[in-house]
Image 1 (cartoon, rainbow, N blue to C red):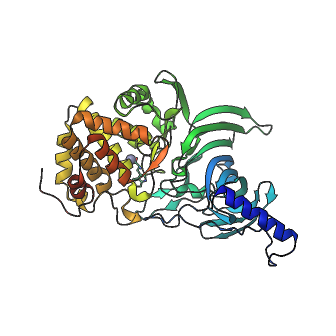
Image 2 (cartoon, rainbow, N blue to C red):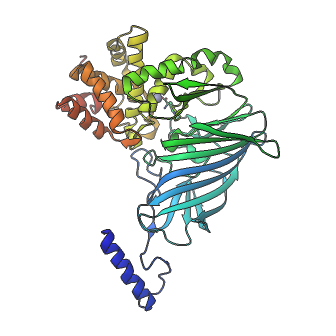
Image 3 (cartoon, rainbow, N blue to C red):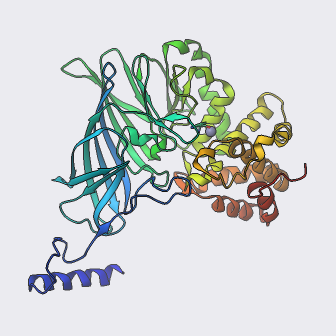
Length: 466
Ligand code: TRP
Ligand code: ZN
């Protein structure tokens, strides 16, 4: 409905309501428009229930207090969102924890929980296009999720604190939200922990204060849109270091006691980032760094926005290059659905191959040939991981990188570089699909690359060795 006819309909409905002519039971105050509940999932091809429909989050304000001794988290989330339909109710994703109360635009809202869905029913319906503010207070001992592939994510306790990550779904273990990569938002996070512990997160550290009871509060600001799977928290006895990269980007690194030796590589962050800027274009965020945590808790490194997180044992140059490359490919240009995960992992893997060419004199063609010969890389086409269990399988990484190497061979180095940089620029801070990429590569190169995609990106089997 157009804005004009919509407001006319509203005026008419209001007049009818005033005359008592509208059917009984129409209890909404908005003038007779009947909202419906927002969808409880976004029908992601691999995670159909993840995320929620009917609204678009612009900002998360998170206030968390954590007690490592008991494992208890006390949280308040304040979500600023815009309704994309007339809403009678809407959902947030939340796993575990106990909800203490909810409000919408300051008025208490009814809430209900079923599985990982938290439904809020506002006192008044929310009209399409309207901005609203929802708050939820919650408490409990967060439990990590075990994914289909057996890996752990979400809020995890460590020896002296906790680490929290969320790819693909674990952020719902520590805050209620719209936990699908397609709904990116700005964040402000206020973290209170016992004295003597660091409380780290994404973005820029804007304040630190000691509370009356001696606990320490740290405030983090993420201005650029962030998918919730890239949010992180690390609490514990970290040693921190600061610096500057790219002339003006603040660097903040943190290392757990076991990761003392990480100082040398942490010092190389500005140099490595500068190299990636040359290759991929302007750095998309206003902070950088790394969090190096204990081994045995987090089972893998993750490209948490601005400040990737690593178990001490996997903090090495190739992995740092990989997670830095994700800042462009994944964090800034974010997949529209989890099926498009190769846009993250194929690109970050290819960034390692490019790094190998420059720093280790290993041509990408050698990496390609090695990957080609591995049977595990041919289990499925990178553009179509069959199930949630396959999200991080070898074809996504290695065969994803092979697609890019084939593209490079077809269009030449100069055009290939232009495609990588242009892709990062065109979809900066946005979401993109595999189709967006193939269309973009064809438009930049002026070539019909249909056969290349059919064979390398979508093909079920292994083609003859090129
Ligand atoms: N996205 C991470 C990376 O490649 C890897 C990752 C996240 C992962 N969750 C995982 C790998 C689970 C294996 C299993 O940087
Ligand atoms: Zn990766």
